[in-house]
Amino acid sequence: MIHARGLKRSFKTKEGVVEAVRGLDLDVAEGELVAFLGPNGAGKSTSVRMLTTLLPPTEGAASVAGHDVLRDANAVRRRIGYVGQGAGAGGYNKLRDELLTQGAAQRMSKADSARRADELIGMLELTGLEKRTGMSLSGGQKRRVDIALGLMHSPKVLFLDEPSTGLDPHSRANLWEHILRLRKSTGMTIFLTTHYLDEADSMAERVMIMDNGLVIANDTPERLKANLAGDRITIDADNSLVAAELAANLPEAREISRDGARVGVTVKGGEAVLPEFIRALDQRGARVLAANVRRPTLDDVFLGLTGRSLRETAA
Image (tube, rainbow, N blue to C red; front, top):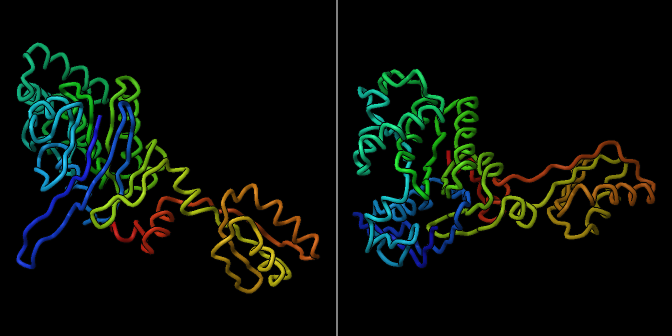
């Protein structure tokens, strides 16, 4: 559904040329939910704007839903929904009127627009708010209206650019419940950018991480965490010297630390390795006082790749 090769975008500034995207290659299959992560300034939003025909690439080629983003931009726009970071609905316009206007912009008939608007109002639990203006809605309600606007013409691909930013945890969870339910019922392809790593970890089938205009990682969340971050085992033992020595001999052990009685080590498959580690300590006469395994996060993946925290750079 989304295909790009060598996609680049540069901007001329007073200081010189800025290469925002330096060669984007990506493929997104039909029905896939892909999360696109990276700190501010990494090139995420510029990439999305190129894929949604809002910004022409400086170099490279891309197609969305089978249509070239440059040569057939109108066909791309008819097949995609785009939910940007700002509220799409007008502050003084009534909710249902906004949806009908969107339907008209998509060249839908009045009857089809009315039917689709009422369908989405019900699906997104906006019933009873049809005559409310945008400025009178809560943050979560506004974002659900934005989703409805993006879905009016039943797009094949939905681009979500940080859809839950600024929402409280309850509203975020509620918004995602609706998005996932819609995806399940339609089989729609979703391309998501977000700063909430837990969203990408739990929702996406695949995660792409971008930094300095380049994609530096592309895999499932579980494989990225297992292969690029690893599990962190922490042991408190009455003989930390022995514990540190044995930790160094664990399979694929790295980042070994010792602080008093506490020894830490990063390994692959920590839950399976920990029992063997404890048995080896027991055989050497070292008593284990406490032990735990911490599963990695996507922020750990970014930290391992760049030496920086994605959470901190995003903030």
